[in-house]
Image 1 (cartoon, rainbow, N blue to C red):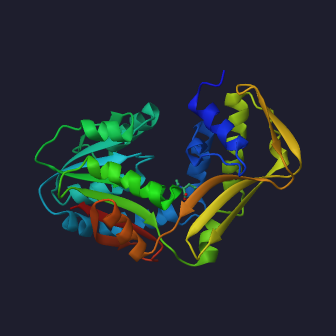
Image 2: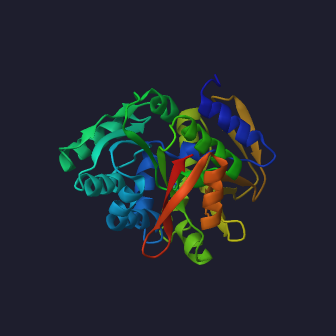
Image 3: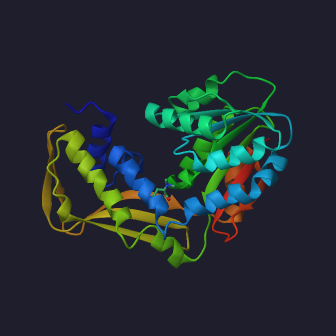
Length: 313
Ligand code: AVJ
């Protein structure tokens, strides 16, 4: 029976004239492990660059946020390494902070909570499990200023109009003067960007192929992974990295759960992910279109990555 969201989405994507799969499905257990490996890759500069921003600029960020009590809400906290660096630096500056990490995965939240309690025993932490926007909406209002963290270039996965809508949804849950600190990867040397999404060890390829393995595991698929390749490219004119799977031959694939056969031509593409890069002006434009003002952009020392402070107007 085709009743899961995953089955419905894969059926849609495999039936389209231009085949696609959503990048949100990368992160099953295996995919999350592969993403952790990606973050360690020499080519994948993003995570190190953002950590560098929090090592070097946390107090500058705090100054721009302004004083007072802070409710820091994190959407999709991940392993928390960057956030812990930020929180450590600002709480030692005597900011009065409550930290609300939100994640859909209970296991991720439990691990993060343990880590925060070990590293920052003094910090108030209120972990929340569930949907970002529902949990964000349900945080009791107080006189503390809200600072929403949306780190790690996740916004890059969305086309501009979708990204603006998502930022508007965050905006709707904030009061005037509240803040969003958002991680955005910026336009830079095209070769550097291209290599970050096509690493020598082939981990990014494995990360993409795992989507097919996941389909086999969860939807009863008979996909032969060896008959697919990986292709990504960066278009510096528009700032888009686009990742794809490529069918190496004319083939058919059967998915038990959908009870359907899908046809692939030789060299046919399955679009898997957009990883969009922005410049300073485009970042300001994004903020304005979602009801914010971009009041500061903090770059790492190599000028690879930006954490941007958006204030609700
Ligand atoms: C987790 C969405 C920020 O687009 O850079 C890494 C995911 N894809 N390598 C990104 C990813 C391929 C990553 N984000």
